[in-house]
Image (cartoon, rainbow, N blue to C red; front, side):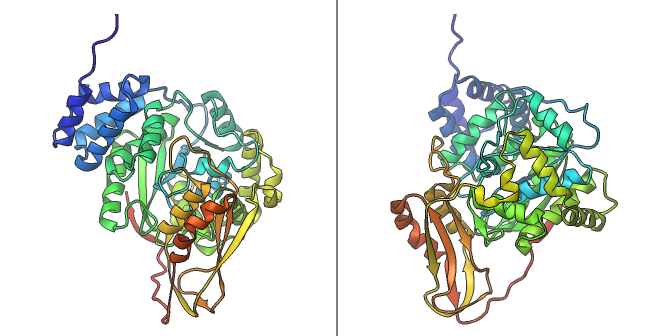
Length: 440
């Protein structure tokens, strides 16, 4: 005997009109999404209603509990130490997790990192990792715990049984313009972190032209929501607001971002990429009870870079997860699109703006991300920057090298890429501030 139909349309209309869903309705909606009983088109309508109307604190707490309960919950009690994860709300050129996790692990804090894929115009850590030939991000809970136990870190995606409702809703949000919602972002992130068995979390909430929230007030609201919701659920959570007007580092695109992360582990890399890695690592060591304070944590992360210990942890993780470790020594083995074009300055002056959002959207349309949830990512496409805001320019100077596989796609996005670089006669003032606020 089939189950009676759910009043999904009534729930959607109630939320659309500003109503509050009761606990039973929320649990039924999440269960229906998980089992496939509620079709995608109704879920998409519900997500849009939430984008417009939000969720109350009670609704959000129940929504998160239901997301976690939609699947299994991993137990990592057999692994000693405070397990600390880090998550970013998404930025352009944000490859920090790939160099950060091995460094923190090398300092003695286990890092069970469960990451996501590209969302909107921002890149996804899983897509970057899968640019490494053979690297497996789909691990069983047993394999997840084994890699973590042997190397001190694991870099993976959700298994089919960990917060499966989030897997489905995450893909739908990416394809239905329902990403920019504080309760949906908060519950998506925390459901994965709690289900994976983490004890603590450092959140990197991006603010600016390349972030989901360009204004600081909205970003602060998200950070406070995540911190409050995480702590309520027993996950010690700290959030940092960091600047995202221009891309992080000099590489945008999956394979080229992996190469930049490896460069940081070798002691090089762009200054902003390294600074973010060191500060976020210090926060993780503090939560993991391995650092006395943030300066002590920063010194430990710098030492793990200098000794090569972080690089060796990444090598061990890549090997255990099936990846080709030769790319760690020779990043030229990473995928690379066959076409390249250099974008050049049309006048002399100073680089006033490097618009992260436009460059992220251009990279996505080249194939670095997804326009539809079924799209296949091309790991070899990307945009390599040759300058940062405030740099002096001569006419004809290289602004960016674009790697692409499809000339038609490049022709379509070339105006967007060119428009992302704005030159002016006067050198702009730069605050130089990557870190804007800390919320705990």
